[in-house]
Each structure stands twice: as C-alpha cells, then as structure tokens.
Image (cartoon, rainbow, N blue to C red; front, side, top):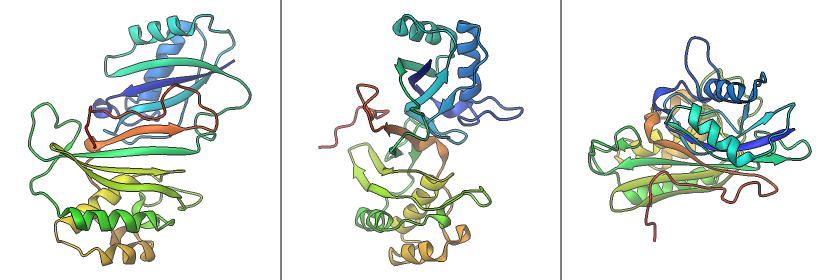
Length: 260
C-alpha cells in the first residue's frame, strides 16, 4: 500500500533532503522513523530535493508498506514522537494507483525570504539585508524570469540534468513591513536554481548589474555569467501541486504574512 505523507522541516542541521554518505539528511531520518514504527525496511521518495540548509514548510513524500496502516492519524502521531523536533509530519494519506510524490507533481512553489532588519530569531530562516534593493528593478527582473524557459545559467554545473527547461507560471517580488519575498512557481526546478536567480536579482536591485543584463545571462546558458547564489537559509519549499488534491492545503508559508 502506498501512503503520501505531508511534512515540514527546518533544514538548518541537515545536508538537504536526499540521503548523503557521511552526512545526516531528512530522507534518512524519515526512513529510520518509519522503520522503527512499522518494522519494515523502507525507502521514502520525496517530491523533490532541497539542498543543504534549505527549509520546507510544505513537503510531500510517499512510502510503500507491506502492511496497511489502520489509523493514519495515530501513525502520524507516532512519527512525530520519534522524529526530531525540527521535522514535523502533518498528515498521512493512503493513495491508489501509481501516484508518485515526485513524478506526479505538476508544480512546486518556493519562497525566498529577506529580512529588512536584523533579528536574532530570524537569521536561520531569512537572509539579512544590509541595504534595501531597488524594488522596480526587482519587479522587472522577475518578469524577465517568467518569460524564459532555459535555466542553464542558473543551475549547478555538471548536475547531470536531462533538460534545463522549466515552465515558470509565477515569478514575483512581494514587499511587507518586515520582509522582501521572492515567490516562484514552476513545473520543475533545477539544483540551486532559485538561489542563483535570487542572487543575480539582488545584484540587479543593488545596481551592480542592469536589468537588461538578465536576458543576456539567460541567452549565454553559462552559470559563470550569473551572480552568486543567495544563502540557503532564506529559501523554503512552500507548495506542491498534484492532479488530484491529496491534502487539504497545497501551499503553506513559514511566517504569518499580511500580503494585502
């Protein structure tokens, strides 16, 4: 029987989602927790791969079990009892057919948070801005991103991608009293892509590059032409969309923000 599990995690102490040699990952801890409860050897499959230090306020994984879970709510409770406090499971749901946490997802959404002012409790979850960037330039850059599909200049070199094509459905900057937030939604993402986009846009917003340079960077298809990647701690996976609604909500934000 296949089960979809909705969870969130603080990625500060982990080397990303995927199991790594000689490093602790979220996938490893989820495997260990489920094995401890079910006494079955498992290999959980995630909706994607978050990098070292990157967070997820909404993450979906699936696991195949030989024995049926009779009480999913109780199973969720027991998972949270054995997992570390920086990983929280919200819901466990049985699914039918060949629904796959990664390959059945039609879209994913990320938010990158930048704090306008320094806060001792926010530094693990938002990049601290030293100087406020020019918002009109950031908005212009976000529009250029949505007009492009080839993100070769914004992915980790030699990552072995079969294709660098991503269909961007939403790309926007949002300003609140406390934050600047970059929001992006696409059918797929490349490794390090969002952090590369944010780092390059910040250079544009701070006057180190002109907005016109961004399209030239896309056309070059060369990672060396783009800016430095933004720090991982500001990045959150916040939504995963499937053809059929599996859970009650498909997107969550890490902070209660008023975006009106």
